[in-house]
Length: 284
Image (cartoon, rainbow, N blue to C red; front, side, top):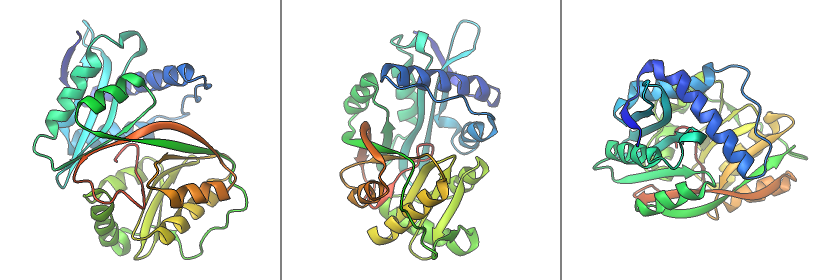
């Protein structure tokens, strides 16, 4: 089994390469054409550097004999809720024990946490591992396509930390058991556009992907999602649509986007209502 060690800042770029290779291989196995590599990597690297600052105890790499990363894991803890931000292994090193070792190290970072969240791909090995770790699986779908006939809500405006920060914290504690805090600023640094429906909810979009929607009620969540889709322009994707997010399924079907079953949300312990909520892949 490959050796594990704590992740360092200079591991971020090679760990990103591992992530892109692993996700590309998963897309090929699922019969999809792998997404093109991003034109720039600064936004992608922001996740690594941000979590190395906030949660160094949750950042690990599996390395080869030359100390080069062939697997990586990032985990965070926010107000007593643990989340797995990333767990990837290079395709030629999978089934070597690296993934299991990385998961165990990541889970140890959350020892004593009152809740846990994992957003899983369709990889059957990952689904099996997360179930065995005591998480409850909630199968999910994603929607993709060019949204049609969607009108933005004029009440949705750019997110302002001074005006909307306390609201976002309160809603985060309700829908997932913990505020997002400075992770919202990290999303913005990665190139995401943050939106707010003042007093009622917030959202994030980047490169046509809806990255996050959280609201005090389903009507507000639907308004935020419609506005996010209207602002995506062209192709858009919405992920982590579980059965608890019927409001979101209604919106994407209204927008004539195509649904497909993909991945799962795994929850353990106290994680709030988890609705109306579309979690962030990077920051849960």
